[in-house]
Structure formats: C-alpha cells, structure tokens
Image (cartoon, rainbow, N blue to C red; front, side, top):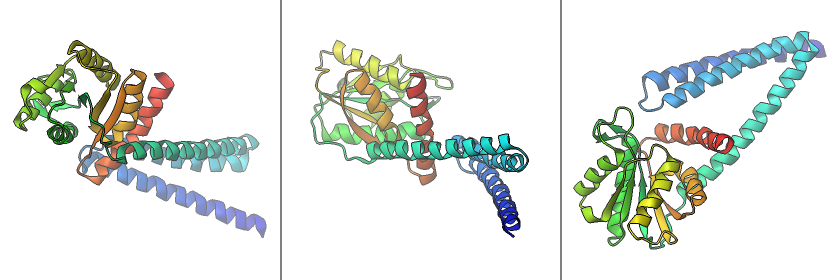
Amino acid sequence: MKRRKADENKRRQGKWLIVLAAICLLLSAVCRFVLPGVRFSALLFLGGAVVCLGFRGLDHWSERSKVGRRCRLVSVFVLAAGCVLFLAAEGMILWAGERPTPDDEPVAVVVLGAGVNGTIPSLTLRTRLDAAAEYLQMHPDVPAVLSGGQGPGEDITEAQAMYTALIGCGIAAERLLLEERSTSTAENLAYSMRVLESAGLDTAGVIAIVTNDFHLFRAQMLARDAGMNVIGVPAELPWWWLNANYYIREFFALGKLLLLG
C-alpha cells in the first residue's frame, strides 16, 4: 500500500513538472514575441523549462539507481540554496532601489548612461533623464557629469544624447560636464571621478548618482569601491513587467560582478 501510494505521488509530481515546463515555455514565448524589452525573461523562463524537465529525468534515474537518488538530492539542495541566495540578494537590490533620496546637498550629480537608438535615448535612458532633470531643477547650483560612451547601434555618445535631452528640459549647458569614454558602470564612475577632479570639484563630498532603481545597489557598491561618497537618485521604468525583468536580471549581473570582478 505504501509503495503504491509513493508511486502515485511520484507520477503526480512528474505530471506537475511537465505542466510547469509547458507553462515556462509559454511564458518564454510571450516574453520573446509579445512583451517588449524583456528578452532576458524569455531566456529565464526557457531555463526554467529545462530545469523542470531535468528534474523529471532525475526522478526516473533516482527510481533505478542509488547514484541517481544522490544526484537528485544534491540538485534539490543546490536549487533550494540558489532560491535563498536569490531572495536575499533581491531584498538588498529592492531596498536600495526603493529608499527615498536623502536630503543631502551634493557637490555634483553623475548620470549613468544607457542605450541610445541612433541618436534617440532608449526608454531606460529616458527615465534616467527625467529623474536627473527633476533632481537638477531641485538643486539649481549643482553641476552634473553625463557619463556614457558610444556603443553598437549608437550614432552619438550616450553623454551627448543626455546633454541634448537635458538642454531641452531647461538645464543650463554650463552645468553639464560630458564623460564620453566609458563602456560599463565601473568605467562610468571611474572616469566621472576624473572629470570632477579636472573641474576642480570636491570629490570627497556627497555625489548623487542617477540611475534606474534596479541598478542602484550595484552602482552604489561600485561607486564606493571607486572612493565616492554617494547617494542614489532612482529612476523608475513605466511597466511592471519591465521592472520585474530588470530586477531579476540585476541579480545575475551582481553575481557576475562578485564572482568575476
């Protein structure tokens, strides 16, 4: 009786794994072909389908082999540990992105670049520019470094695209310093420090970093490594599925940073 009940539970579990794999494949297709800007989520759901099918295979192997049972046990442990690590990291990323900006008066603002489509700022960059324009209008005497070089598909540097957009928002040109060499967040911050030093600004003072909320935790961590005393100014994406996509993606970007530097 107990053996029969255990077999029924295994068959039921196997069916649920197949159903979950099918759901993941469906969601992957929706993210890839229906929702804009969430290609990473499409890959993530595809990976989820592979994991479900992999556990289905491990179940069959564990029924026939002691080695299979051990491999399944190790796989469950690794998956559980990964989930705990993911929740802990996401908690820190969310905490950094949702915190209100402190009232400190900064000596300068650094706006981190994002993609440019030809000469037009991407949606991600537009949200950063909106947050930067609002913050600079609240602090009218503070200069800003616009940081970002030129990448594939970009006809101008990200810094130049930001400069044009902020001028259009009424920010005075003399307040805007351009950093046009960087190709990563770490370079954004390191090269921006050099621009601030060249302009004779006090780099030991508080510097406000404008970037998207999901990116703030990693950006502030890199900024502190670069010797900057920073506060965060978060920019929000307009759609919940974009926020979810980038918050999850940021977990893997943070892991890459910690593992590979």
